[in-house]
Amino acid sequence: MKFPEWRAAKEASWRGFFAGLWLFVFLAAPAQAAPAILKLATTTSTYFTGLLEWLNPPFEKQHNVRIHTIAVGTGKALRLGENGDVDVVLVHAPKAEKKFVAAGYGVGRRSVMYNDFVIVGPMADPAKISGIGDIATAFRRIAAGGVVWVSRGDDSGTHKTEAAFWRAAGLDPKGAWYRSLGQGMGETLKAADEMRAYTLSDRGSFLFFSARGKVDLKVLLGGGKELLNPYGVIAVNPGRHSHVRYDLAIKYIRFLTSPDGQRLIGAFRLKGKKLFHPAAAPPGPGN
Amino acid sequence: MEFLLEGIWEGILLVLRADPEVMTASWVTVRVSFGATVVAGLIGLPIGWALASHRFRGRGAAISIIQTLLGFPTVVIGLIVYGFLSRRGPLGFANLLFTPTAIVIGLVILSIPIISVFTMTAVSSVDQRARETALTLGASSRLAAWMVLREARFGLIAAILGAFGRVSSEVGIAMMLGGNIKGYTRTLTTGIALEGMKGEFGFGIALGVVLMAIIFLTNLGTRILQKS
Image (cartoon, rainbow over all chains, first blue to last red; front, top):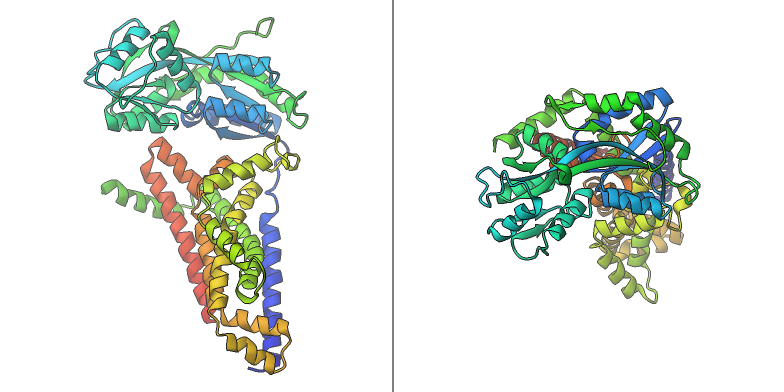
């Protein structure tokens, strides 16, 4: 091989290099930015069920906003808000939400909607909890009944609620029968199904999975005040994170709690079933 | 068995129908994987080349480190980069978390060791005499280095393709740093994870088929380029 050939090859490859670089710069350039982006951290239950895809487009259209939804557990969602990585959170863990606001991470919390938690288990209900009025008794029966309990174990709103129930029953669940997964509601329901186990779920997620024949479990306990599952929306405090889109967050909160937003929530159906009940109280003291 | 076949069939249909969700997820996947491979190549190729063709103090340690990094768990990369890119992290001002760029950063870190190690092996296996011959023929040392790289080109291409395959099929980094935002940072793999969570096995497998097709086409394209 002679030098001119090397040089030609070298030049050709430099050309290739620059072409590649150009292509990369072109490809890596940020996607056509929508006028404004609102980052929303929420729980899997609002996302999987399709509620947000039903609820958000009208808002996006009306305000020329694009909502970037990050679906995680409540614990993680609040953490994202704490770090200022999102602008608004839609979650379901009233106690943790209060702490979040009290610590100055969030402002303008409003109630949005509610559904309820359900205790689900195998069709045969070996622990015989169906029809028990008292949750603590049901939990004690599960603990003593030689059955398996699957826990989210992921610091989500559902996990926090479950932990509170065990505390209320005076139990500290441990052992081979108590399986902490550290995963989302869908995986947990599927695991409970596979293991013929009991678990706690929000009704929306359970309907979503059971309506489509994904799980062979049954609601054994539901309804009642204790099992109420309220959802709240909170703007990330711009006093702590000056970069957050507080203006958009407030618009979104207003939309969710407006008569229109509330009507949309109430009108949402999955397989003909109502999953969420609107619950926004008018703004005022104590809200 | 049936649902597996259905999934594969569904995948083919989704591509033929140009399903918008599949198309955007594929486009995001190609974009971040390609971008990450190019950047990692620009960094990893020189590293691998230097490790193979130069003797310097600490070379052994450097090789050990980079070979250990081959096993860097993607979730750990995700966590560390997350720590940097979060608003509370040192690079938070750049507003990169939950963007495709954030995924690219994580994937670059993932693929630099791959490209470096493959390149090092490829360059090491080139007969030293090639370089010496070039030098005695009067080539500059740069030209001689070029000659060696040319000889090693199949190995270098394998390095790049290996990295591309790795980053396009990666899920932990894409999930943690991209946030799986529909139409924006949802890649094929995070889409598959989501469908798995939802119990939509068919659609998940379908996305997997699309992913494999992309990797296959990349390899095929490279082979055609090599032959021409």
